[in-house]
Image (cartoon, rainbow, N blue to C red; front, top):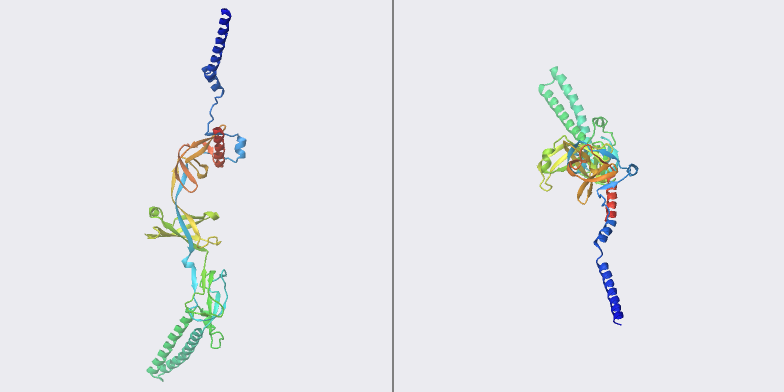
Length: 397
């Protein structure tokens, strides 16, 4: 009986020991098994700076490859400017005498030639000036005849010297009066040929024709048929737009780089419009309000593509600088505040950080990160930037 109890209790104790051992193994598995499990899930990390692309994929993306090499930078000063009218090719048209407007021949936008009629005014003042001229002309003819007669009589000792001198004086005075009357008509814009046709029987002594003072385009009109026009009223504005000016503000720090005669580039970025102008004036005075010196450039405008009043961007070339490595600005991509180029590798591209130096309008110097002779992506680099961004995101997940 005692033997049976002993074996019974021994079996229970052995079962409890086995249960306790299994529980301990579950909580603390063998280290060898842990390391084996880690090795099963271990992978080699990918290089986030590289992108694999086949030659066919590179071609399909439109990416061109270039070789880094030395170059020359055209350093420039950037400024702002405005297109304005050329003051020597702009005219205010004034009637010069008062009168009623009989006809206005030109309208805004019309092209006119110098001497072409613009308007006709009926003027009492014009009638008086014309009549005075005709009277002075007749007086000259009369006094000239009397002078010639007295001259002949004096030479024959028939007439006295005093009569001869009086006739000569009267004749000279008449010529002076005629010249004054003539100059008044010429000042109104009449030509010598018109004066020759002017007679007392002329029906248009009171009519005054206003002509264009220059070739150009009518910019404004301030005359209406039937209205009274004052002598100092501006009735037309005409401008020859074949040449315009560019008014530019130059900051004092850049003045020593700018001089008259320089060729400058102007552009209207929103319209993709560019042109060249020549600096003709640089003010020696700094403006108090703008804190800039005024510069004037002359711009050819034969096709009327440059409109006065337009604000433009100005680039003034100052010097040529050589650099060991020069590439196009649009090749560089900025990623998280750093500048990168994409080097060509046997199986694609590698992103490499670069340090930038001097630049001009299109190109920039690479100070560090790209050496002469290395090949790099020269176009569509924004696609490479996007592809690398996708790859990095996939690796993170």
